[in-house]
Structures are given as structure tokens and as C-alpha cells.
Image (cartoon, rainbow, N blue to C red; front, side):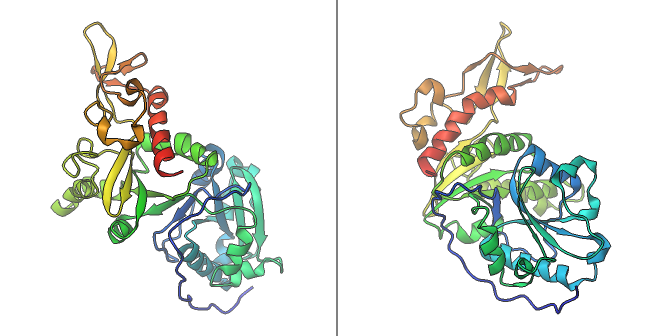
Amino acid sequence: MKKKLFPLLPLLLVPFSVSACSSSKASLTYGSYIKSDVNSLKELTTVELKNKTTEDKEVFLLAVYQDKYSDDCLCWNTFKNVIVNYSNTYHELVYTYNAYNQDDSIKELKIEKREDSTPLLYIFNGTKIVSKFSYAKSQDMAIFEDLKGEAMNTRVHRSVDKPTMYYVDEAWLDDNYNKADELCVLYFRSACGDCKYVIPNVIIPYIKNHTFKKELLLFDMQKTYETARKEDATEEEKAHYQEMKDKFGLSEKGNANYGYQNGVVPTIQYIKNGKLEDAAVYFNDKVAKKDDGSFYVSDSFYTEERLPNLKYLQGMDKDKAVLKGKEIKAAISTATGKAYWPQADASEYHRPLLEAFFKCYMM
């Protein structure tokens, strides 16, 4: 199984734009414009793999290796370099997984565990295996050896289409914010409860049932948020998270028209020629209790004063477009008296607003 390991080849450049797809094939859930290397490949834990397949029902690529058998095998190390070039060229995420980590919780996935170093590539749609490729099969070998990733790209896209959502980072936005004609960016934090609700329950189902003509860029701000709050954070680190929200117009300080409070997530923005032109905020409403015991939205991104700036809501009934002041039938009050709007109930009001944004700017 040992083969000569070739150096990485120069990466190819591909255009940023995405075209509408009429294919009946499933589309990969996530892509990425963040540059990767062999040290940054994301290895899934068994819990993460179970969540992707059974809970979130994602469509994704999974490269599987065989524990210690793969340690010194050049076929697996070569394939990791293939993955890096594939990801950087075609901007599609490929996760890795150790076949020897699996347990009964994912036995339905039927991931092959071998007593040799054979690498495997799976395409999953939820718990279903869409395609499986093995280095042990001569017809699949090029996938694992073509360092340009061209063979892998050809075979993968016989089964699935490219994603609509692509991860970016601050450096990518800094470099492209003023260059691109149009950008749609979802700012979120991976550990944020509201974000973990809206992406799998609202955004992904909507994308599966509609054709987007633009890519939805995903900027995960979690690491910067955590860095700002660690015990030994420097003053610069503490300030950077808020400065980033100000810079990208999430806060009222950063943009008077489209910023909300000190900046909240999830927020989605439409940027045209380097200028923030519109935005939508999911959840993040403040709830208060009246003297009669009823609840209402005491503050929201969706106010009557802001409505003229929200172009995607023009023509919508004001009673649906304005949430501030709205009475709430279902609310949760804590022992300290703080009130919350349950996500499922709040989503009934927020979902039409986000869908209006998508219809205006993505379709």
C-alpha cells in the first residue's frame, strides 16, 4: 500500500459565482472559502458524525482512515493532500473520521473498518450512503492519488451537486468585502442557541426546497467570541469581538440603519459594491411582562422606525413586519422574572421575514 508521496501542486482558481442548478441530485450542505492544509482538516468525533447524519441530516463528504494501520501509510497521507487541494480548489468541505472510533450509536452508517490501511471516501445524505469509494478498487484509485483533485471532483459530482452555503472568515471578508458586486453573509456563532436553531430548522430546509442564484456565506464568530472571554485575554483580544461587530455593521455603532444593539447573531446581511444595503436578524427580541400578566415584545430589530430601511419587507403587512410591541401568547418567565419567547413560537413570526429576505436577494 505504500506509495511515493508527491508534493502539493499549485492550486487552481475558480470563480466565486454560483449558477442555479436544475439537477435532482442532492447538494452538499457546506462548502468553504477558508484556506486549508493537512493540519486544519476537520476530524469528526463519533458524536459529531451522529449529529450530522441523524440530527442535522447533512449532505457531506467523509474521508475514512483505519487507525494505526494508516499512520505510516503513504496512501492515506497522499489522500490527505488530495483533500487539501480539492478543498482549496473546489471549495467543498471534506471531513475525516477514524473507522476504529465508531460504536453502536452509528452502526446504521455501515462505515467499513479494515485491518489494513485502505482509505475510503463516503458521500452521506443523512444516514444514507449516496456513494462509497475505496482505494482497494482499481476504478476508484485515481480519487485517492490525483493530487489536483480533478478525479475526485468528477466522481463526487456524479452523485451530488455543489453547496449553496460556504464558510468564510474575517480575513476572507476583509479581502473580498469591497471587491465583490454582491455578498450575502450570515454572521453566527456555532455555540449560539439561536444560531443552532435557525440553520438546521429554517435555513437548510428552505435551501433544499428553493433554488438560490447566489451563495450564502457563513461567518462563524465563535472563536473570536471565546478568545475575548478567556481569563487571560489581553485588552486587545477583549476588544476585538466588539470591534469586529462594529466593523461589519452588526451593531448600532457600526451601522445606524442596519445594526442592532451591540451586534447580535444570527444576523444576515446583503452587501452591494462594498456597502451594507439590507439586513435581517433572527430572534434576539426582548420580552417584557405587563401589569395584567400578559407578555409583549419590548424591543426588536423589527421596529416601525426601521421598517422603511428594510427593502425586502416593502409591501408586507405592517402587522407582520413589525415585531416590537407585539403581544405574545406563549412566553416563559424565569424565577427571577426574566421573560423569554420560546424559539418555536418566535420562529413563526421570524421565518416569514427571513424568507422575504431570501426571495429578495438570493433567488
